[in-house]
Length: 108
Image (cartoon, rainbow, N blue to C red):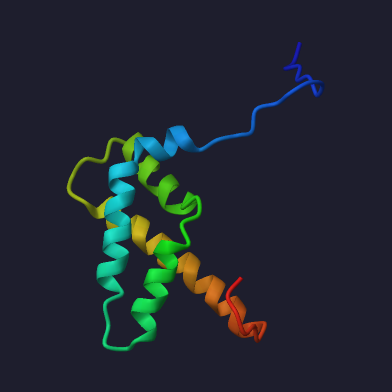
């Protein structure tokens, strides 16, 4: 017999809290790295970094990157921090690119 799921009654919302708590210290380091790499004399660049950090969100991509490193037993330095920041930069770049293509005046 397969799994039976009742659709009646109250259901719990899915939560990433357990996973996020597992990598909380590393995620804080990712945010610090993003801010450090976005330091620039071009005024718009640090503004984008501040927006990226202040926007918060689930940070699903870096959380999954950090959790994968932990799951695979990575414990040799901090390359997982740089990789998670890179993943977030790429995600942000795709969003900004989409806004340019759509000729959007504002970031969603």
